[in-house]
Image (spheres, rainbow, N blue to C red):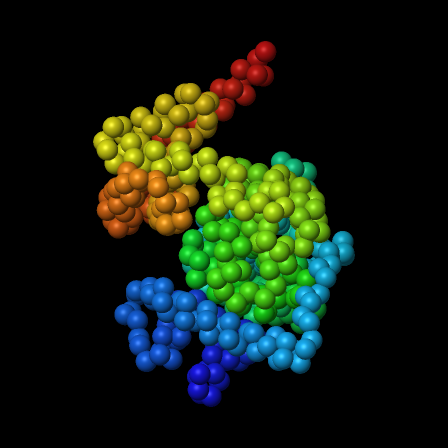
Length: 421
């Protein structure tokens, strides 16, 4: 690598440097700039090829490992510092950082803010942050009232440097109030960072590497991925501290309280008991995958993957319509929602990405899942019909509204019947 290339990448990857403080670079831009160093420019609006992503990761690895190599050459062994749990006072002051203000990220942020805990949400999209603020403003008081707790401060930022070093900007504060907060509040880095990004191994690995270099050394790094393990991420990218990295996969909080925890293969054991305790304090119910076990999809998601796969196959073959499948599912299991409505809730683009990962990593599934995935993309994803996030999906927006009204009527009827007994 030439001196000019090294200098350019140093400014690109140093989250505390002036380049990032001026502009919060999205990962796609990071990958595009890595391409420019090779003399190639990706087409506008298109994702960079995986080769470019891997090039950036390899360059990051080269830069990040320089000090380690020098120590090794000097004959010194490298031992990561022992992880230390934050004190109760630190938990009240230091925020939980949620990276990604999408459908799941905002819900994760809401839960963590439900027990007087400060939370920072980082996203490059002001629209996503605005939507997340509206959702949390509408939903957090009710969640706290149901649990008998008090909400914490929820702040948002589009600047990664701010997100990793401070509590961010209040989601409801005026510009003048934000300036006062910045002047009076000491810098306190997050004690927990949770990435809630699309299911892309290069994307997640790149972002976690940036977070690792920017956050305090005792900050726990968690991935919300449902189909990618942090062991894969640690092996794929320039992550130097897998001892503080783990999977924490949420379903759809706050409705679903279960969270699965799984090691990166090197996660400090003390993190599991500490994090599980903190999760219970905000109303979550953690399930820990045993030490030494790596399970893609963890526990429930392996079962759910089979259900999704067969549901999509039934739809692709024209055996039944979404309404029929969900009605049968609700009737048999007594469930509130069926698999088609659940997939609309998650997002059909996310479903497609996860199914693609399963196909790539689980040989022997046969041709049916591939045909079902192709059907999903051609009929829904490629047409912008992604479910709740766009309006129509497997169910139309009107159909989902009708199902929601029916559930509400059933709940009200149940309340009245219970009151009359």
